[in-house]
Length: 248
Image (cartoon, rainbow, N blue to C red):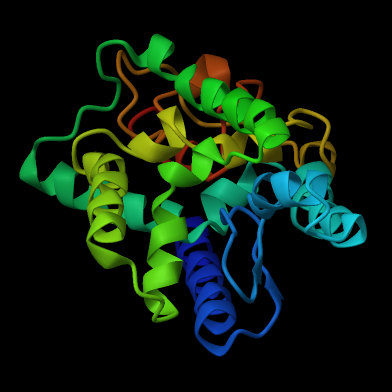
């Protein structure tokens, strides 16, 4: 039942994103990188910051985007945005299911702990680059290029080349579940700043049935729920560990 609600929520996320991008109707979709007409996402804060510093974007609009697409979801549901709403997350979940059926899925790859630092470095580089009007995160963000293509904006050869390269870590979810979320996405880091004391954490006392498999095949973030849930900062509150039959 929980999985069905999660997939329904992810479908709504895709529907809202499509409405904003194709119809250019202002919609708020937390967890999306932003930088595209019609969509106000968490990552839009990172996109607008250089423009605001250069005086090209109204500070009030930056504050509005930060409030509704970052701070509000961060203090209410936090990482659950990644597990339940983010359109790119649903794509990675689907790829992981295919990888599992093909028998190529590796829940926790070598170098897992070190790779997790990359997204923090990307976030720091993007924040620092704002002073020089740079957007390092958007050079590798697949949603940035995908939404541009959906809007019919000509990407050109270089743009298509960058889109192809940006999709590689997404396709890597065939082998490592949520590869992009685990190791590259700084938007998820922003959403989990209030981890442990969000409204969701205070209202829901969820204890997993997991009793500790040697390697967790359920958690898409490579956590061991018996010890990591709900304290681990990487937890995206997807609820898979609550429904897992392996530990019960």
